[in-house]
Length: 328
Ligand code: GZL
Image (cartoon, rainbow, N blue to C red; front, top):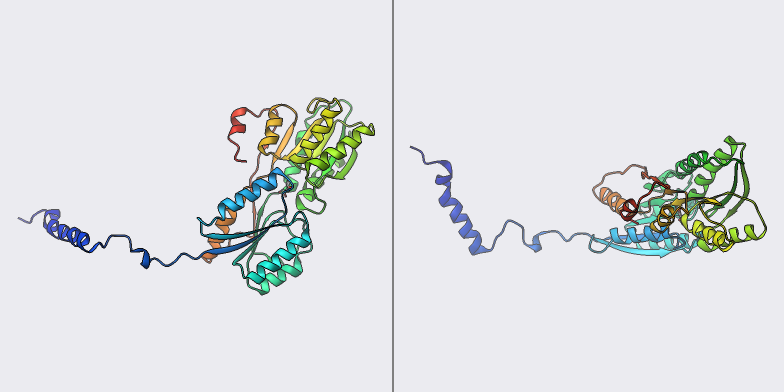
């Protein structure tokens, strides 16, 4: 009678185990046999450090494109100046980086420098705001937000405000020419065109900064302007506006409705407190998305040309539990 298979194989298995113990050959190859993993050098041209959103975006990128993850990241802060981004991109080309990541200050003016990057054979990944170029082969792909959709969500919230004598709106715009400003402004213009009871009493660029937002609203209040809504194209300008309202004895969320964008944790605390009435998320966590794009490209896979991130919004229904779970 044949011995059960495993009993017939047992002596051979024992011999193999003894051999591997004696020769130290284990299942995993010795380090010398694994090819050295390639360090990927990435030149990242970042807008600046103008807002909580921007800082969260930079943190996300540096955490994802870290040395432990196989990257050498060269971060350049343009301090909100496109010409500094163009210089940084030229430096990246000279350095022969493997990839360029661009978070553009504004939509236009990129054709020449991106043509130089293409001539050098360096793929360009655009994050956050959009760019407008004559030939979209000048960049490999883009990941970011649908800013007009964000604005339409805010306008829909405003349509639910039952202000008896209509809406008198102060509009704090972001950096003029940035797609975040273009999209969010276009949505408000759609709302103004659709509602006769909505009046735009002021529109001006607050450059996404808290200081500028506070300065504008402070001046408007000093001038005695009458308004009941502030449509602020990011949280930091909303923070400034709220400080100005309080300095004039007004209660944000009661005397004036605050509409904001980004939905960072600081702003969500103010939403929970009833000071910000509506905050539209603009997700800054592009680091893992760029890491994933680069790994696809390293494998010869072409990622989608455009990837829009999904985003939500917050209002008075927010809870402490929801806030505590927010990632930025
Ligand atoms: C939006 C981003 C904007 C944020 C601002 O994606 O470009 O720039 O809304 C940031 O906070 O300054």
